[in-house]
Image (cartoon, rainbow, N blue to C red; front, top):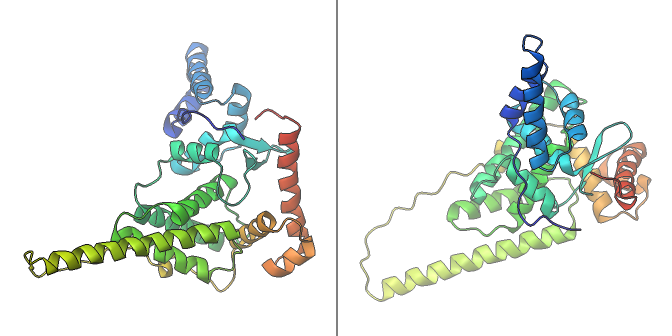
Length: 299
């Protein structure tokens, strides 16, 4: 898979919405409408999104979608694998697990990733709360794939990004608590990456303690130091319900398909607590994405 040499241009969600409204505003002259359309097409072209796909995406986006979610949808759409029903089934072959580089770039362009692990963990908790709130209001709600991609990227960063401060290390431990308490089957490579990062965190803390011990031993000033423990969102802050949500089940199935594609639908269904038909539906969507890529379908 090829990667871009530089991140794509950002499609500003608020500006795109404004231009789209102007392009369809009957109160404006046709000249003004065409100017708005031209500006939209020019922006999309600079971001690698052709005109047909731009209008296709705008026609399917909910009008009341929050700006941050619309920005994810908008900036990922150039990488979308779309089935015959115009439903996004993958991004650059990605369905589950750590997103590939081009998807990570597009996600960062849409919403820059926080600079530290504490911020990454806080954003991850925010998306989890959003999912629980919406599923509480609508039991059939499932997070759209552009939000699932964002969550997967945050989880990859929590697994792999270096921890620079105690805030970051506490965030990683909170993430570990969520991983251990979840019913989602992760790929062994993801668990190994998290274990390696935790090992690095402890080694860094050991080095810092050795430096502190050497400072005290060498007779440096030893004032009383008050250590203020940072505030990090604990796993308990993420709402929990007595039942697994649709998003939990969806992620469990996708994780199992990613880690064990050779297993039967019935075997995966037993492990994930869903019906074999649900597993078959997601397996088919993955195959559709792979078939489109192997057939050279332009995206």
